[in-house]
Length: 179
Image (tube, rainbow, N blue to C red; front, side, top):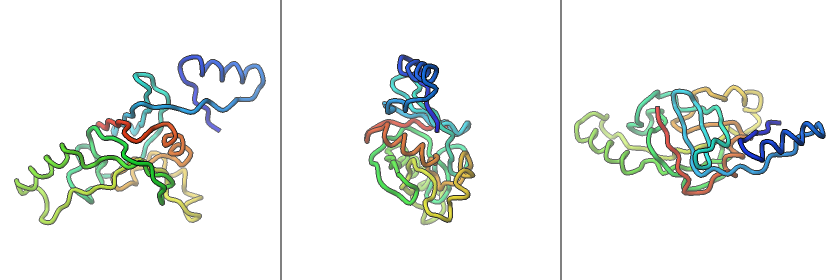
């Protein structure tokens, strides 16, 4: 079991409890006021103000750096988004983001007008933070998803981690995603 040691009194309480009893008590529930994803390092960070409360290795879409241009490009978008809902999912939990936002729609319209996108291209949607595929057929391979670029543009984490993240954030929480 993984215990998060946070800066401040709570972390010292966990350390002191382990030292005194040999057993770690579960850490208090996390709270995050915002999230940050660095695509280049595959690091998803939960912050409470400016304090890092947790960090995770994230899986992304294999489409590479830069802005998500259209549906099906497998790019994890870049920009400022918000968690708009917590939903059950075939990926355990799905924290839906408000992609596409106004900036994405304006960029898409400009690229369409300039003829830079294939005819019939759509902007897409259904971008979020989620766990691994669910079902017995995935059990043996679940750990292999960690940090691999396997999503269609979403942010993937391990199942215990998405449970932790979902409990730590509310709808409306900001996530900044950069390359």
